[in-house]
Amino acid sequence: MDRTRTVAGVALMGIFMCGLFTCQALPLLAPFQAAQEYGTALLFLGALATGFLFGMLTPSIANGIFAGFASIILGLVLAGFMLALPALLGIAGQLGMISEVAFERALILGIMLTPISAVGTFIGVLAQNQSIRTVSW
Amino acid sequence: MNNEHARRSRTVLIIMGFLAVCSVGLTWSTVKNYLGASTAAAKFRSTVSAVTCRQEDSKYTIEIDLSFENRSEWNLSVTAVRPTVYLDGQYVWGRNYDWLSNPLELPGGSERDIVLEIEVPDTKTEVVARGKEAWSIRVSGLLDMPRLGTKLFATKAVIPLERGNE
Image (cartoon, rainbow over the protein chains, first blue to last red):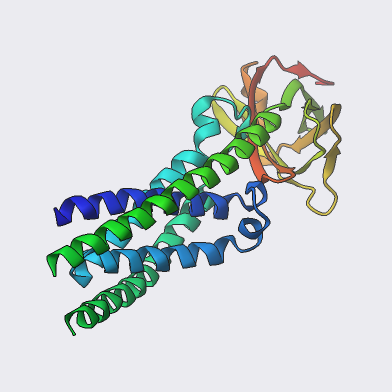
C-alpha cells in the first residue's frame, strides 16, 4: 500500500516538476509574469515542496529522498519531451530546437535540486513525527 | 494511529494531485505558446543559390550566394554564419562570420541575399584544382528570435560549380 502511494506520489510530483522545468526553460513563453521572472526560484521551492510532501507521505527518510529524486528525474524527462515537441512534430524547419546546452543545464539543475528536495524530506519527516507526538499526547 | 497515517497520506496525495493539475495547466499554456513560436520560427529559411570559384594568382576564392527568407511576422536577426565547403566529399575549408555586434537584420516578411567569401589556403589549392564538380556546401548559423532566444539553423546544398576566371 505504501509503495503504491509512493509511486502515485512520484508520478504526480513528476508532472508538477515538469511544469516548473518547462517554465524555467522557456521563461518568455510562460503565461504568468511570476513564472517569467522567478522561474528558477519557483523550481527550487517546488523541489523543497516535493521533498516535504514525500517526507509527510513515506515513513522513512531514505524512501522520501529517493522518491524526491525520482520525481525530479521524471519531471526532467517530461520537460525534455515538451521541449523536443516541435522537432518531434516536424514543425521546426531548419532550426535546431533541441540544444545540448539546455540538456546540460537541466541535468545540473536536477543534480542541484536533489539535496534541496532531501532538505524538504527531512522537514516533512520532522513535521510528521511532530504531528504523531501531538496525536499520541 | 494507522487511521491517522492513512488520513495524512490521503491528504498529501490530494495536495500532490492539486499541484499536478495546476502544473498541467501551466505546462499546456507554455507549450502552446512554444509550439506557436516554433511554427513562426519555421517560416525562416536560408538557401544556398550559387557557388562560384575564382582563381587569382594561383589563389582560389569560393563565393557562396546565400539567401535568407523570413516569412514570419517577427523581426529576426542572424548573428553568426559559418559556411563550410566540401569537394568530392572531402572537407575543403570553412569560415566564421561573426555579426554579433552588428547582426544581419531580417524584418518580418523580408528576403535578403548575401555573398560569403572563403579564401582557400595554399594547402588546399591542390584539392580544389584536382576536384570535380561535386561541390557541397553546408551553412550553419545562429538566429536570434524574440521570445525563443538564439537558435541554431543549418542548410545543406549540392550545387554545380560556376568556375570563374580560371
